[in-house]
Image (cartoon, rainbow, N blue to C red; front, side, top):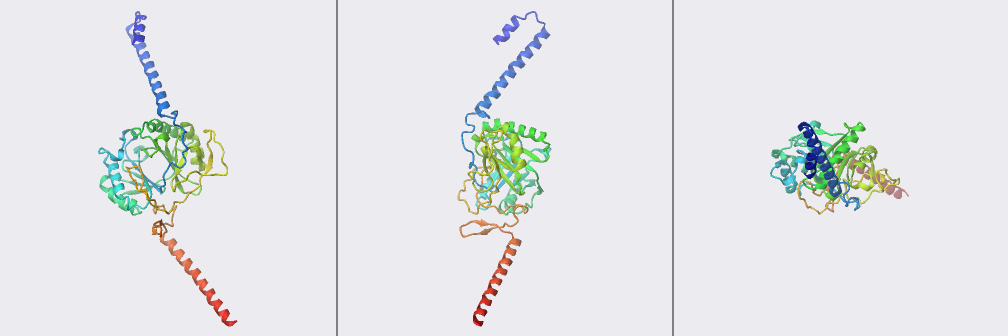
Length: 380
């Protein structure tokens, strides 16, 4: 205000219209300076320059799971801190309630997360994305949540109450749940913009989808993101990254998505059993990180040992079990069977029938050999 008073005093001869122009310029410059200062402060406290960045080894910070379900719902700017517990958001709350109530019936280690609905790209409120099966169901409502859990989550079969589509390409989910944690609110939207910018430059808009998602755990590792993309063998795996900055985006696209190479410095873990670290023979530094390694992905098979950790709090945490819901393209040999340790091993009936016939043939050959041996001994 003092600066403005001096300006008026020393410029008394300025016409009224010129004064308005000068005042507007001064006001705009002041607002611009204030905005810039705010952005710098946000980045230093909660963004990519905050002191906690790179303070912890990220590998092993993801608990084991085998299936990830994403509910498309509204926009990340509209999500309350606990979207799964909000009375104003009945659909996520209904799913979270059903998830907790049916946890003992679900044999698949599952995480459920909210992601943004984006109608212009074909993702509507109530759409459900399931990975690694690469399936999308349309039309989930409060009234049919129970049937969805009966068929898909528990029954490991197609949902009779919804329209099923197959999704293709690669998906990147970025935590931008700002009302839950300011760090994700600062870092997430910036990463989404940078990812979309680099994807557009590479002409990959039709092959890679970037979506904001709710809390996935580990706010202190923001920017957090999860990638789902086919590996060299065609199998889709979910990989988690933390401490991701805009400078890391080109490597994520060119190394991880395009070539299937892990960026070790940023890697938190993957879908499947816990993995402390992925080792590779050709470790080398990447240009976007001081100690970043690029390592060929290893497809780790799901463990058959059931975990006793049944803590489920809200919509974004998992129930423990072993998957029997793989896509036919990936896991054609799986159905549920009990083992002595309480594990669940999955085999399909065609494969089981083939194995039985093979075993029967082997037993037949062994029996014939035994009879021949006895006959030779008698003849001798």
